[in-house]
Image (cartoon, rainbow, N blue to C red; front, side, top):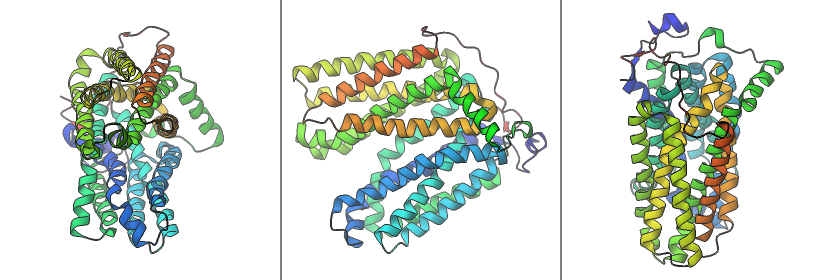
Length: 423
């Protein structure tokens, strides 16, 4: 019995597919609360009497600020009190803050509850710790690839979901949908997820222990360098998300095409992330991610050359951007898995610090690229190419200047919790 080994849950072992679906659902609670809001922002601005409709963007900003800040402590708490209890508390606060966001009668109150909503949503970072508790090496990379697909697909469907809700109900119903979805995930987690943190790995929350754990996460070459490599790649994604509407409006004068192209590019990333989950255990995450990064640099280099020569067309942009995003599907989850692998003994604070660095660092990188938009695709192509080179530099540092090194990881530790294994 899983409960007998881990000693913190009476929950029976669950199957591999159910576990992956649960981890993906936990991550989806965080992702869905961003893009679903976008169609409602003008309506909320009018309903709450905002003089400047652009101020409605703070609804998203407040949430993301909470997510970034919250990642610093949820993982740390899970290293002390266990993964399951912290996830349940985070989901409960998520439900409450989502409901109170929907009931807010003033804009400042809404922003305050959206910040709290983001803080609670950041508890989803603990799902990465759960994955690290149960899996290592290529097995972990496979699971992270499968759950990573959720982050790629949610932005595709979330705006349409938000628009559908607005056609059927008032804008406040969007927040109630967040609460309803999180409630289902809460019940599922309560009934089916065992405690995965072994008692001997529980950390006492003293300053010395926290500093030692932080030193392990930030002082380990592999952990730090792959986190930074992931950060700049994430920054290139955020730059694209921030500029894509302006590119279709100002460069191609075809703003109506933006949603469909956005879906195509995100879909290409989802396809390669799924492919990675199928082949990573056989080929290895270093071979796949390093090759994907080199191809990324090559594609963005070609894109940069086309942009510099001023011969960008709609077709070339769509093809090259979809290919660029496909390469990210081969690198991001593998980089995340390799960053987590050396910090298994402090997986909670490891996931927290790595999530904080990649979230805020990626946002800064994306903002710096986005601010250079000049009515052409040059800033996006140049920024992505630069991010690729920077990521390669961090990978070379992590690997002692040798790419494609074979890696032999320990077998996953999931047999006592997950029935039937990962096959």
